Image (tube, rainbow, N blue to C red; front, side, top):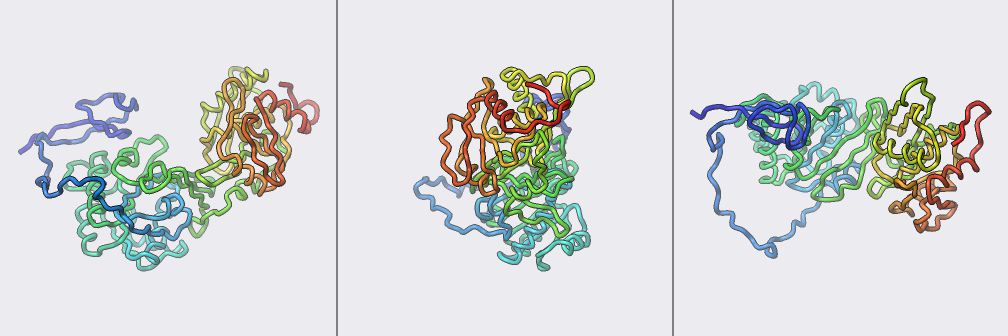
Length: 465
């Protein structure tokens, strides 16, 4: 009998180490190593002999797969997937608990059942009765979806063979276990081995496999970070529980682009698709408040108008506090340093708060100039004109750099009624009917332009830059 021994596996990167360490040498994550039981024998239980009948084939003799994509019935999801599902493809849907992964999965299963064929929904967290109660609250769920409450991988594959579904959905992969691994469900070894067995089954039968994985805010649970190399598509469902908006992104997609995003709104009847997210993001905008700035961003091929808000408040003593929501704090610190050095502004003794409305997370550098103008607007107590939008990347020298797809940004701004857009001076701004492109060379010129066109607040509330 093989002697059992312990290895320590990182929950962040999956690296294995012979002993416990406070910090993983591979990914440098702290307190991420967990103990797993391994076998000294070189052959895993249930391992099969190598099949030598699968001979190498020349690349020129391999035929292309001309199979059509399977539409999910949810246009926003199809956009992110690149047109739909691919036979034999493995999709991993990750996100924080409570963001709406199970709701999206159940709606997706109901639409596919109506359009493409049988769907096997494997639930390891809810009972079938709980799943039915949730399905009754949602709109458009087919009553023919096959539901299986099971956590054993071997049992799932047996029902898989018996029902021959076109799509198998596992909610969630953290609850699955296999008899090949002697560890608890949810451990790194169980999650990885269970996903590998299910993926092999999907590839062999040409079935679409969708895995749902949980990720905490600290990223400590084994989920998408361990499984990314095993799957074909990695989808991330983002959103704030306090906001109705949800954004679906693809960080890996072997069958399409990773630049597209899907926008949803959480309502009483489940997730609803948002065709024009810009209008909803700007619906509650206050045009007379200093510190508010509109920026046209691009998420894949889709332009979106996003509001960035900034609040600069005096601090009684000590260095100012920096709080950022929806935008990288390091990027805001860089912009504050550029403003202080290039315009003479003083933020050292002031608290700075930056927020992106609607629960959206901004990662594009095209929002640099807009964030800088929002900070300057709040410090000066001068509101930007309501018909102005701003886009541009800011360098350390204070220069405003060009951004891509400027024509698409200007058209989206004009469609929503913005008549003036501040753009980088070095970019060749295309002509757009009803929109004036105002070239800005550096942040100092932008602040000077703000002071010329804005209306100052009553005396006592403004400060000079």
